[in-house]
Length: 161
View 1 (spheres, helix red, strand yellow):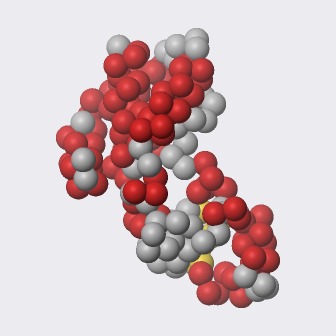
View 2: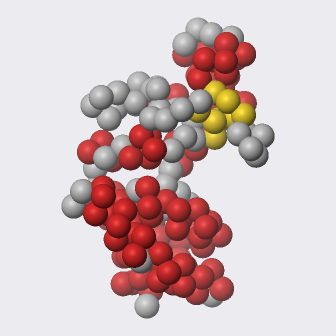
């Protein structure tokens, strides 16, 4: 299935996903974290991020001060130079990329700074995080961006209904 199809299916299922995730948030199953890890692992065994990289092509991560310091070292720039070259401050007063796609994404969908990538990139799409039910708003948004997130929510619906 291509990205356009995923996006369309995710958009069509937004209301059902929101309703389902709301139920999980109101009454999380006791073993939710364990089951979520299993669902996450199963989905990521099937879906290859390198064949997609839509997150890197369409969204920009937040950059923490540690991210900025780490990456400026990789590029042998002062943090202020790294900021000037790659980042801007958004409406929430956070550092984000000046533009997308990510300037560190290669034509082959590999990240040129993968070992040093920002924390937000390391954690995306957040489907293996503890207390997953606390980030429903983010999960719903991510189903429109990330086929794996869409698949995780679909698997959750099958397993928890």
